[in-house]
Image (cartoon, rainbow, N blue to C red; front, side, top):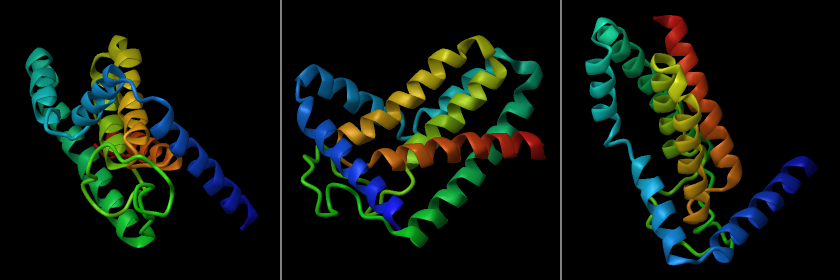
Length: 173
């Protein structure tokens, strides 16, 4: 129990400082853009482009991607509805909320988990892109803390969920 309290204090401290310390408009624009790239709208186009450029394995790309996202989304939804962790901007923490969150609960970060599924798919097909796509996925997660809608542990859980969902899909296919 003490460990959970310490972890929550650490989460609170980090999210408060991230949301209050960095208030430059260019930085805000950057993190807002990173967050929007994690909304998921571009994933279908990225997968289509990946399939087009690697047409010999296009079917496998779609099959693995669809299964990975299905696993990810199922666990994400079940976790959010079971754990019901309030977002920092609504959980009594003095956080500056910079965007309106898509829902009430924060654990795990769906933006982060989705970004790591997509990054894993791209890195699996184009290994030399791995540093870039995983860097982008990490920035999606950081943006959610900066914007005041997630705790760092939500991001960590989203990362693990996204990577695990992809690995499970790869194993199942």
